[in-house]
Length: 120
Image 1: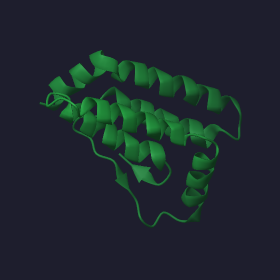
Image 2: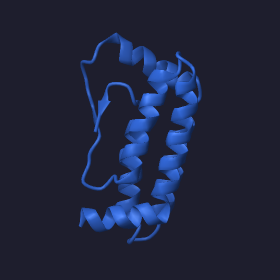
Image 3: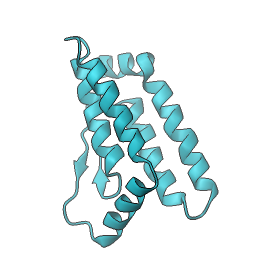
Image 4: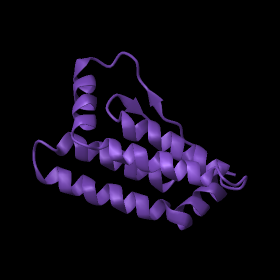
């Protein structure tokens, strides 16, 4: 089931999300300061290519550096990605067929809001 879901996800917009994350990841990696943010965007790109069969776990005791980077992530405006996944998840949840895609957006939401200290 996860293979079919990943194929449908890829064809119905997952590829566009992955390109979006990868392009902004490359732009962030141009600067030395933005490399940690670029790495997290590449994580999002990988998960947005095939989200079915994977889960995102937010680690509880990762130290103070991931907390500081998460705060910097939110302050610099990357929370807009989380809002995008909320809106897309709500739109997908309108129909019964779209509920698995809405759940995939909720998994991406967890990683896009607090990417540092999260594992997939």
